[in-house]
Length: 326
Figure 1 (spheres, rainbow, N blue to C red):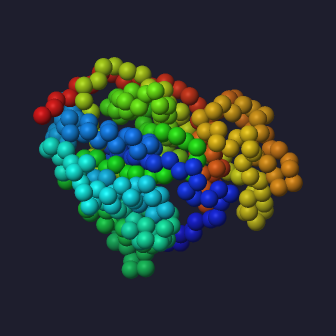
Figure 2: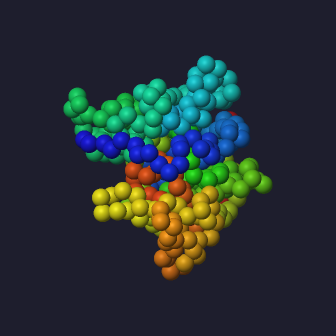
Figure 3: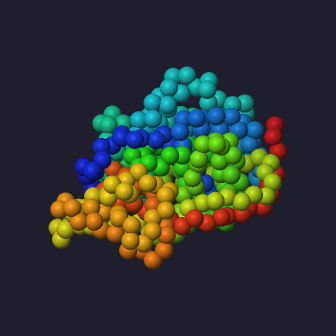
């Protein structure tokens, strides 16, 4: 398998970095993740009480906290290493909590990955077949993680994986949701947003199959809940990923316009500037309606052909849910 190496971007990795937390969702269309400042550590206290969703087959028993899925995203790496040395902060009654460095070679090298993106290879093609000895390191590592914390869909899989990440985009606190039809996940996100208030917390909805990817979080089982009344949740549904203007040879031909830089979650109207060529020409947004850009100028996405993603603001609703606690 051929894997691209990371490209040098317009923005240095680590600049304006935000700490990220990622709890998993269900194994198919219910997977979730979140990006959140370190204050969100307090949410872990709820895990000890969210032990059995009413009607669930078994209570929450095992939780993993991943850092270093991308080796140059240091917040998660430092936190996981801290908890490996002293796990008292994350231990909860009735839970087995395991801090884990997901990509140790990339962490040692200080790079996003060694051969290919670990957060893109947890799919059946990579997990279900015996790989040759010369397979990319991250594919081999994904199979190891799958054996340790899975298997996907199996009764022995971990209940929850919190995957800690960073972003160079000006995303602030962001939760990432991959379904609009799961009441439990909507309720959980609504609870987290309420706990963080008045700090803003945005929800990025990826429910388009063509835009999803095979993440580390997908190894775990369904996340759990507590008692929640019926609620509504404002989310930003991803519509399209927009690439940079490029030359015929594939090189980037323009940079993010200054008026768009750091404007994640802000309205972008038809005709507004989005790119600036090196000779000073402004390239406007050619959409036909107002959208909300996210992951603007994310350094790790240059190689993935993404300058930013467009979203639309929508509201999801969820019925009431009940859970029992120990």
